Amino acid sequence: MAYKDPQSPKAKAAGRRNSALFRQRHPERVAAVKRACYLKSYVPKGQPPPIDRIMAKVEVVDGCWLFQGAKRSGYGQISVEGKNKQAHRVSYEVNVGPIPEGLELDHLCRATNCVNPDHLEPVTHAENIRRAHAS
Image (cartoon, rainbow, N blue to C red; front, top):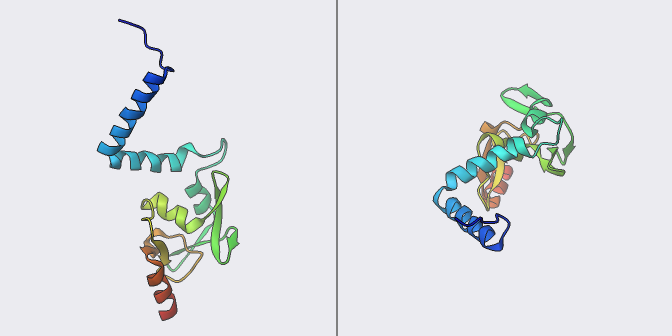
């Protein structure tokens, strides 16, 4: 049996084909791994996961989880992987899953600093605007 160099172009191409096939056959496992990576792997050494940092800055009022940390235009902000992200989006992605493409999160409670995933619903931009004007 011939020794195969794992760094050879042929071996690398075979690995890419296998991983692409795996992604096609098991999208749910890929999503679970991505979610787990988001929760744990991309946390700088010595820093808690993003959801722990969010929950440390939450005050519960009438079922709302009001984020008391940094805010921008009323929305909580948190740094994830060196980029500022909206805290309610991070909370939703960690607790529920990815936000569907083309949709945005509507705060059903109308509190922009609420990070309770039960109070967030993915809707179209038009629906979000309609609901905001109706309240």
